[in-house]
Length: 136
Image (cartoon, rainbow, N blue to C red; front, side):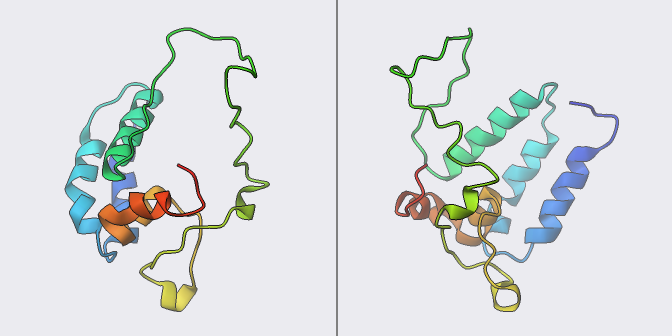
């Protein structure tokens, strides 16, 4: 990760600007700010840290592991989920509906981000996904 520019500050300010009016942004703001203050040298480390933070907030129990070695893919041993959600087919999924801040003016925007869901629904976000047709 390059630290030549202060991307962390700009990124967090963008999130803050977009979601400051959402009902639960204040609840997650300090923790999220703390994540943006942590130093990471590798993008994979940043991604895993963010994924685990979201996993905790959504009360997900799935284990996330990083492989130490390359394992040859064998169809009989694994379910292949690589092509389930792609840009060409993600719109075919039924989006989870929840209240968004500017929905009255703009309508509902599906498939935004997990942060949009968290900031608008709060700790019930994980339960909302578990009870939907979307499989997490």
